[in-house]
Length: 283
Image (cartoon, rainbow, N blue to C red; front, side, top):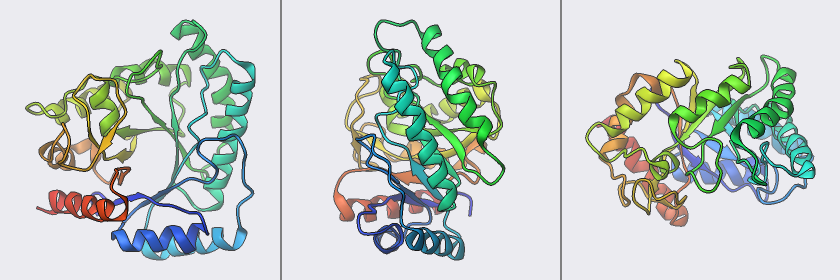
């Protein structure tokens, strides 16, 4: 399949029991999950029986699975405690990702806090994140960097910002990108303009090279391009619109890359968005 389409699924009650049941209701061909509270530092040991069932069912159904690391992680933070906890939290997400057979772990690229320069923050990203990448084996998930909508002192929001970030991490072979369509639109790439999606994907490939795009968060935007606001909208209902997503499916850089929705509207909205994306892909 050129692009499996699926969603971020709830897992309270069990990764396999709850998460994959929800995925089936969506008609999801790929899934993304949290393996810890996304808004806290506490880590969870997981449930070995659920892990095994999740892994087996994903393998049997040919469903690529991904983990989203907690939102608190910030490797550019000037606070020592945050930097240390970020290492622990991401190491946990990567380990849990391996245990459930995930192909990638998505982490936000963070920001330079406390009045630090981008250079100082990126030096810390290197110091803290590179050892985690070096721990990964061929059996481990890829670490997928997700840029932000450009709020505050974001280290990575425009496509070309991935350049210095990748340089800081020696363009590590286990490093990839998760592109969030709402985030890049909010950061200033007008995907809704003529060939806006194609140009943005071209810029991304020019910056990090081919084969680094591993996952796409397919989200429309409640706000206009360049608003620096991370507010997701249902596919075709926001300022990006349907057409750019159709264009996304035909770009060489997206060949084989799964799409995961993180849109509003609960189950009904999610079913509709998965269906709409499949139509744009198959139409």
